[in-house]
Image 1 (cartoon, rainbow over the protein chains, first blue to last red):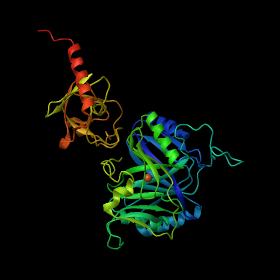
Image 2 (image 1 turned 30 degrees about the horizontal axis):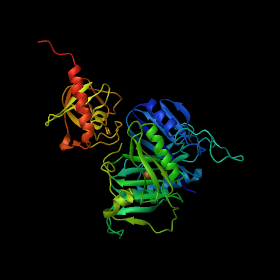
Image 3 (image 1 turned 180 degrees about the vertical axis):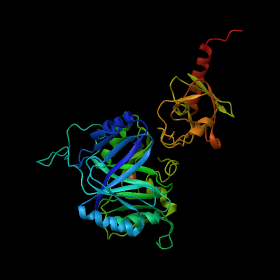
Image 4 (image 1 turned 60 degrees about the vertical axis):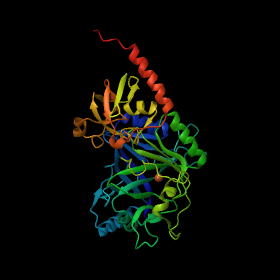
Length: 305
Length: 121
Ligand code: FES
Ligand SMILES: [Fe+2]
């Protein structure tokens, strides 16, 4: 019960036609709807109606959706959010096309989060009846699914508390100024509700901003091939292929045609509630973020939408 | 084509038609502080001292505000010069990192200057 995953990322793009080309032909997402100037996509291994929504005008994130297992989870989360001091509104079914009723609130970091219990089920591209391992005619990178996002917040500890208390998330890794949590200032935190190494990460920085949202891949080979496709499609690569020390994930950071940072992310060890948190100190943050270069490029904390 | 003059050093860089300021400077061997290369982060701004530019894509207002445009701030990754321009980099961020490309660009610039119609006396 509770939150199962980040279900959708809804982002702004400056040029819808170019963005559509990127998300459909380079990332290989499947368009499921275009309506009222918004385009909806799913990955081939996702069964719900959409995981990415593009909206023309501006850059950055409009909102994120998180899916709970049971309708009754909404009441629990609503109450916990109110107890945390957040103002929660109810959203009705269809406010987001093909998405159930749910709740919506603004985080202390000024991001809009929605929580819902259902989306129209379309099914994966391989189906459930004696399915094949993958669709035969994937386009471009052919990402199977949305994975996680990294957002900025002025107060990382407050955001970690919010995700813990309202979403029942737990941190898997953290950058903190002191190994003693009570004395430490939290610089970044990676959090999840299940074995996925992170569903959301929070980095100290400008309120309401997006660092990146990420798509899942299997392994190094797929990450390397993804980078090859980016070169073919003239996608600006920010860094990679490389590894994150934090989460151990394999990665490429790159930019969509509006300058929103995307990531392809593979691996990451399984998370457990009782696993001790990995703690990184600021002197080793570069190794934590880019495990091979061990140097933060100047874009890591300065370039975002 | 256009010539980008860098203030205050006076260096002149040749840009083929339709190339962005960022694309042209990097092709000529220079580097400076840039980010997404796609108009989203605002990190690539320089000050435009002379000449005009046209944006080859829509640019979000929260990346480049109306006031900034009026003040001559130029988002280099999306700006294509209308003609010759003069720009000033912020905090001396422009660096020449590929002298080979720079010398090739200089040849292109001299060629372009030689083939340009001579102004009548
Ligand atoms: S490099 Fe990001 S706006 Fe130009
Ligand atoms: Fe990530």
